[in-house]
Image 1 (cartoon, rainbow, N blue to C red):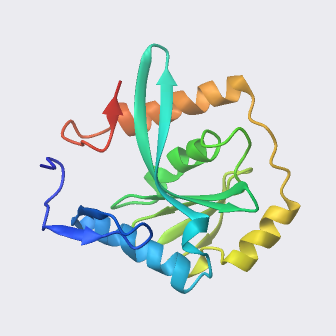
Image 2 (image 1 turned 135 degrees about the vertical axis):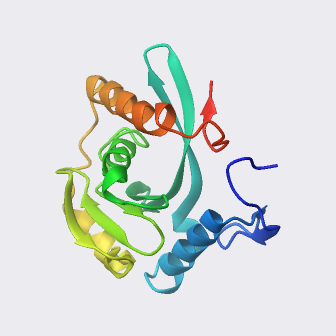
Length: 183
């Protein structure tokens, strides 16, 4: 039972082959996964789906799902978060995720509603491209990563980003959203 979404049965996850609840949101996630492999040139094993990110804000803790993380040559190089509706309202949380999923700054952050996307230079927070077609290909991401410093995230910065993520993703979430685990 999924209280937050209309479940229309099950579907097979494109990347893992697992059976998942068939929701409108999951259909968009599958579309993104197929785009990443079919048109952007990534191998399925270079994309980690449904990452779980533990965040802490003072005594409060939660586990937040992050839709996709792309790993090239052993480094997290891109993070993608899907969410329906406006992209601009999701920019700050994807930047926080790009600073929390790894002990270093992930170079590229993407926020998408499945129809459009914003590609963000995660080091600066600037939108560098817009549209699903503008998501970097594997070759483009290899080039971006080759010049990226993968600077470590300080503990103070990680604490601040975790609080931001908690405020946007947990405090601002729908009470029936069962994708977020408050611990």
